[in-house]
Length: 401
Image (cartoon, rainbow, N blue to C red; front, side, top):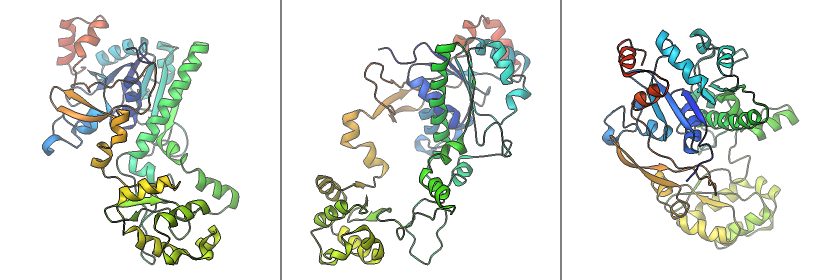
């Protein structure tokens, strides 16, 4: 079956999360993604957990295997003379170059945007960095945690700390800021591809992860713009129902800001006496009496199981959802029906469950395949560039590949 990007070639000179997740979106959609990895060591993500049996192995990292589905691995050092020449040949025949090095790194090894454009005027260069190619923080060292913390999102994450205790800013699990930056870059790259189809021109995409993450804080930024005041943290005291609440066997999220939602929640909980007053029938009344409303709701939720609350609450038109553990989400009937996850065989790591696709497409569905072994496609790619086996052996001995 054909895929949306079957005729597209991508050079991914990137590592860890932000660049590879951008490249993954291309490879899952059918593009040939040639992943450039450091000779001998490869992408540092290869040595990041999780590992089967908690035993580190460069071909078994769960992080690497997920982020690099469907790609081809080429070990190459473009900073060397021979490696640089191979890199030029690759770039000359590519549609995209994805990279996530510090600003100025490519310039330093002879591959500024101007040089790349001269090699291939149709090339679309996607540069993913913590803070962007311009601005006073251009050369700052960044990480997913720093980008998240600086984006407002970490500070405004709800907590369950009781009143009077210090509430520390939180971070999202995983690599949320880097993933947002990579996804943002992939979307921009598709727009640039459309522009190129119309004009024949490539361009340079500057995709900062911090900027992508800040862009999710629209309510906070609007409040600051309108009022000139910093947006307070999203504590339960200030907004109605914005926290996970415990039930008998887990947690649920539910909202009772809208009057119709509050009435549905009351009915779900059996119209308890503590909520049976006209004082709570309006949003203002519920906000003014939040301590009483919340304490009654918390006590009543503890009498019921999570699945019952969610199932019956949804029937009543209530916005309510479960707080799932990984095992519950991965095996959920809804995901099975949508084929959200797929088992993929890997010659070294074995057979494991992976998220199958981010979206569904009727004519050109994404089809993920396994991640590559380190340098698995060296011979194939180099032969395509006209480099003989003897030359390849010499380049390998010199550390260029």
